Image (cartoon, rainbow, N blue to C red; front, top):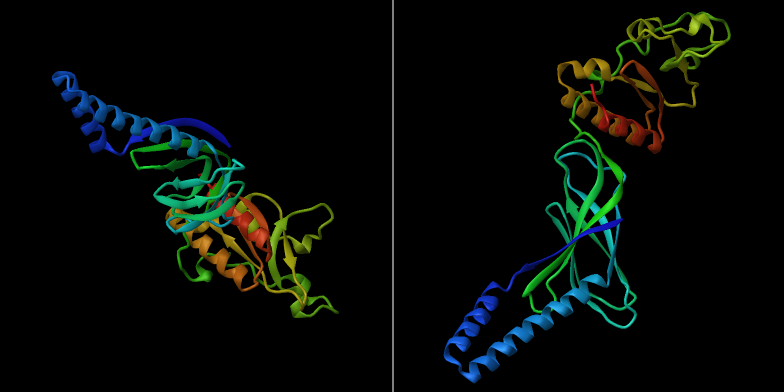
Length: 296
C-alpha cells in the first residue's frame, strides 16, 4: 500500500469569500472592528485546516477484494479503517473507490471499523495497483482533505455471465463411444468419457481422443469416471468465441458457474490447451481467471 498524493479542496467557498471580502474592507477602511472580525474568521479557518489534517493522517486503510468479481455486476469491496492514535477519536472519515463510498462517522482511539464499498467494473480483465481515496471534511466542512492510496497487487474481473444453453458451449463429441467399452469386465458407467487431458507417456492408444487431437494438433487422452463420480464436460472455448470473443467468454463464464453450482465437473479447451474437468471451487476460479486474462 502506497500513500502517493495528498491534497485539499476548499468546500467552504462562501466562507472563504466572506473572509476575503471583510479583509479588503478592513484594509480600505482602517476600521479596527473589521480587522478583529477578519482575524477571527481567518483564525477559525486555520484551526479548521490543522484539525482536519491531524484527523486524516491518523487513519490507516486496509482493503480486501472479493474473489469473484464479474464485469457489469455490482460487487462489495471490504475496507477497514484503523485509528492509529491512542487518545483521540477520528471523525467523518470516508473511503472512496470509483463511484462507491464507505463512510465512518466516528472511529474511537485504537479502534478498527469495517465497511463495504459497492461498485462495479465495466470490463473484464486484470486490474493492478487500485487507487482509493481516504477523505475527511472534519471539522466544519470548510476543507475536504484527501489522500491517494494505491493498493499493491492485482485482481481479476471475470466476464459477465451470459445465460445460454450449456449444450451450445460443450465439445460436441466428448461423450462419444470408444473401443474400451467392448472389453469384458467393464460396464458402461466405468467407461463413459467425461473429459480430456494432455497425452502422457504410457497411455494406451485406445484412449487417444482422435477428434480433439486433430483439432489442437496435440495428443489428447480420454478421461473416464466410475459410477460414484459426476459426469464432467469440456467447454470448447475455441469454437464459441469464433462468433464473438466477449459473448463467447460470457457464455463460458455462465456455464462454468452453473456447472460448479450443480456439482458437475467442468473443463475447458482454450487456445489449443485442454484443462481437465474438476468440480472444486478453486478450479472454478482458475477457469474464470483464464477467461478474464484471455487475449487472442
